[in-house]
Every structure is written in C-alpha cells, then in structure tokens.
Amino acid sequence: MRSATYFVSDAHLGISIRGHDDRQQRLFSFFDSITESAESLYIVGDLFDFWIEYRCAIRPDYYSVVARLGRLVESGVEIHYLAGNHDFALGPFLRERVGVHVHQEHLETIIQGKKVHLYHGDGLVKKDVGYRILKRILRNPVNQRLYKLLHPDIGVPLGTFFSGNSRKMLANWLTEEKLEEYRQHARRLLETSDIVIFGHTHKPEIRKYGDKTYVNTGEWIRKYTFAKMEKGEIRLWEWFEDKPAEEIAT
Image (cartoon, rainbow, N blue to C red; front, side, top):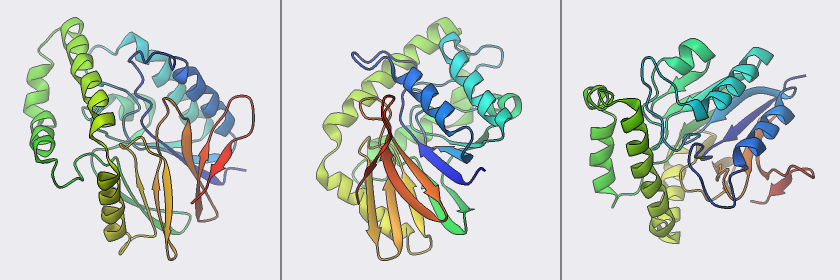
C-alpha cells in the first residue's frame, strides 16, 4: 500500500566526482526500494549538475536517469521536480514526455494533511546579492533561447564546466552562519506552514520548532540522505545499499 512521500536533492548527476561515481547506481537502487511504498517523490533540485533542454537533443548520459524516472511514474509514483541552481532550465520534456510535475520556484502544497513549503534554497542568503542578479540572468527565457543557439557539443560541456566550478565554490562558501540564516528563513516560512523543506546546502538537517519542522534533504554524493513522510510525520534518513537506512536525529 502506497502511504509514503519521499524527498531527495543534490545528486549532481552528469559530472565525475572522484570516489563517488557510483552515486547514480545507488540512486537507482533507492528508487527501486521505494517503488511499492511511495505515493509521491519530490526532487528538491539539482538532480543533475547541469541541465539545458534542447528541443531535439537530450544528453546521452542522462537517458538512463530520465528512463528510470519514467518507470517510477508508470509504476504509480507521482514525481515533482523543483528546479535548482544547476538544473533551472527545465523545459517541457520532463512534463510532457515523462510525466513529471515541474516547479520553477517555491512550491506550497498539502501532503498527508500538512501544509508543506518546498524550495531548493539557492539565493536565500542576504549577502549573496551577486548570485541573485546572476539567477535573474540565467533564468531569463530569452537568454536561455540564445544559449541554445550553441550546438549541444559546445553548450553542454561549457555549461558543465561552469556548473562544476559553482558546486566546488559552495563547499568553501557555506559556513555555520549561513546555515543559521537558512534556519531563520525556514522559521519565517513555518509561520504559515507545518513543514519547510530545502536542499542546496548539502548539509542534511532536521529541526523541530514546537510542532513545526524544518528539513534539509542534504545530498546524494558523499552521503545518501533523504526525507520520508508518513502519517503526517517527516523524518530524515541516510540510505545504504547493504543495510537498512539509519535515521538522522533532530
């Protein structure tokens, strides 16, 4: 019986990370493990390290991932995909051909009777003014159409190069002060929601504020973390291939 909702983010598929190139297969194994229990799956951004959707071309190394998402949809799992800062250029392909619900920004929804606010989390830090300006440029539909005038053999490697540099910068940029800013932002959203879920930081975290909950789904690169919601309660877990998942404490 399907009764659970799952949340994952930040696998950054499509780029080689030394010592962690098995993460795609691990993600596939995770998908297989939830097929019978999952009512829905929310991808909270950056499943791919770089996504640009050409009208007549899909990256060959993404084919198996897209096919696996399609298999989940066909099995009865409802999939929602929130754009991240690496896969923001989501076009109609996933929605029209795969059956995935695509959301470009914040998403407020009701899950198991709880009001849930989801957002990838990029651009929340007040001092990150430069990125917020860049975000407006990158997400401008005209600029995306101009970029796609580049042949995929040029546009994809170029985008992957800059995307990889951005991901590396995050590790040095993220501090405890900035993580606290994420928590404060979540607490403001919790004034009108029961649960707030972010990704982006690559730091798995779950915090209770009274009867409200903030969750960061972490990453699927070095640690394989996900959130699971059942009967209106959300918990954070680390997934393993060779043993049961372990809960990450509040």
